[in-house]
Image (tube, rainbow, N blue to C red):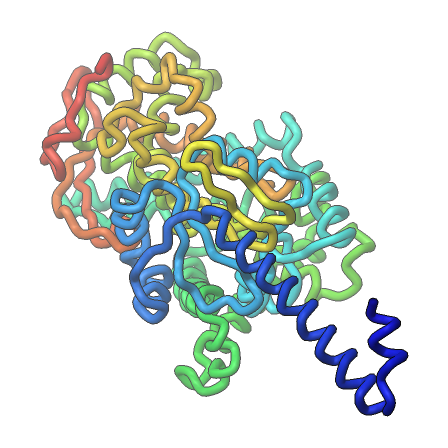
Length: 496
């Protein structure tokens, strides 16, 4: 029919007009069908908070409470309004099954729209942001530092640094009857453990405080940029590029770590710094510095705040501390890490107070159907799996806002599936062995030898304990823990 129409047209312009009309009709029909198909699909409910308010909430300390509020009103899978061009939608997931499916999918990747902002902190590709063969080779190389032999060495380093902290900081404060900022102290202790265990470098207190300050400035700027890409164009004009200067100071510490390695006559083989320095993949010290800084970022503050929160919760639950001490008392000290109660306490501390604000973030490489809700998450979507949503979802954990370590004695399959503090899949946390070594060594030793009292309740800064102060007292025989509860409703027995 179309050939007949074209053949009867007398002039070329008429032929072109007819072709144009046919093309437009075809495109209109195709667009109409696609529109109907698209709108026939059900997507996760959308948060009605505007873009500006959403960016402020996600980039600020109120992020966890904002997400929990949205989840309670919309369900534990919902859309966020964030200015990420070219992305079908941004989805938050607090459902255990859906989170597992997305994180374990072999095609799912980290979205560079979000993670590339961290390159400004590390001043180059790191294990956090690298992709392809560079990341694969880096990850495989680093994994050799977490064998059983090196994990045992890390346990010893964690214990040694804890004893040093007690001698030089905790005991003098006890003698003077002074309280201490538990968040600040655990961050500095964790950093000293990570730097020593991973990089064979001794960092003094002054250097550690300055390093943490500069790193926090740089990370804070990168997090704001991650959820608001427009900041990339404004960075040169923001705070006189203070974050840029901070990242340079952070890089200088990585250079000092490398200089220290090169100056040693005797080296511990197989440490992280040893593997990095011997890896031909990295051609310059700048590349090595980026890898070193990336690994430090991934391991010091999350573990430090996990330690702090767990000790705060234990300071409010003396019966749980006594259960822990009884379990440790029947084990030799080098076997404390096998204590069932200790493992339960560590897990519950990380569940109740997950130290990673955004959790895991991925970009989907296929459509994901959500059976419970009857909707789908389309290919190309950016998916946040905030641990605070996952761990505080009442469908995953009964009484999710209470500190109940005994829930881990015989956990439900749903709870086990939902508890992923180190993420899942190929992009999970490469340093989880070191983090576990620190958590189990430090908590066991401190609880075995000291009682803690909450002196100042402080406040919540995101998922960080801000200004929470404790008072310590060395244990003498059967002295019980004296407590001042922050949240009386959380005081539970070990057998609860």
